[in-house]
Image 1 (spheres, helix red, strand yellow):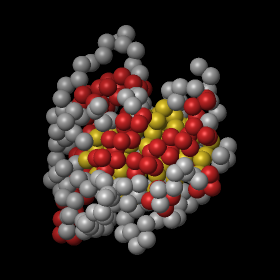
Image 2 (image 1 turned 180 degrees about the vertical axis):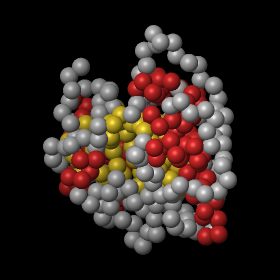
Image 3 (image 1 turned 45 degrees about the horizontal axis):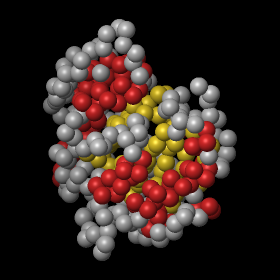
Length: 323
């Protein structure tokens, strides 16, 4: 199958406010202008076409074909968000201090460029989504840049430079996030009997099947979750995020969610670098987050299956909406 298909947990209440509101636990660049790459044409939908999030995902597949990415959608706060995790092979995973400015520039450009391409080349995006959430990592899945851009910022632009894209985003009152600030850590020798992200990711996708709007991706060093129990002396946090949709309220029940998290944890137990945290977003057909969950990496690394009830944090984000 084609792989397709984003948060400090210092306080659960802060997270709930960021997403949907839960009911409780159960820099502008200065170098020479750079033009965004010319994307592959996508057929323009007729006015009568029924634009849906699922259709957009299919068109994102076409637009980004051949690249290592995941795309999915969910509601973040009150914004319907199209998220894209993308590996940029042009960023050196071992970038030295002297190359940080250039690598940061590359990550910013890539995040802006793919967001613009998606809005410009897939007209249904303008009809369906409020914002685009690019996440740019290097070949070792180390974080370089992630942001949230209003879809409207890119509408009407023609052959923009990176500076044009920055100005368009800032004109909406949106401040761009800073790119990576620290030099990547040196690669370490994998532990015996470990597996890489490609293997773990394939196992996760195989478990969830070909269901639309599923996602599984790895981001190292973004401090996505500060939930304790990190890998001892780990220089960068290793965060895995998964999302899967459910079609009925029963599929979002705590026992079912815990069981599915257990299967994902099994796939991650061998991961190198060792996982520090697993975040899960369980969404309804409309992309609303129904359940948000966190599994500490310490439980996953210890291969405790089934997952202990006290170790998994479940937050009920929204009641099931009747069709």
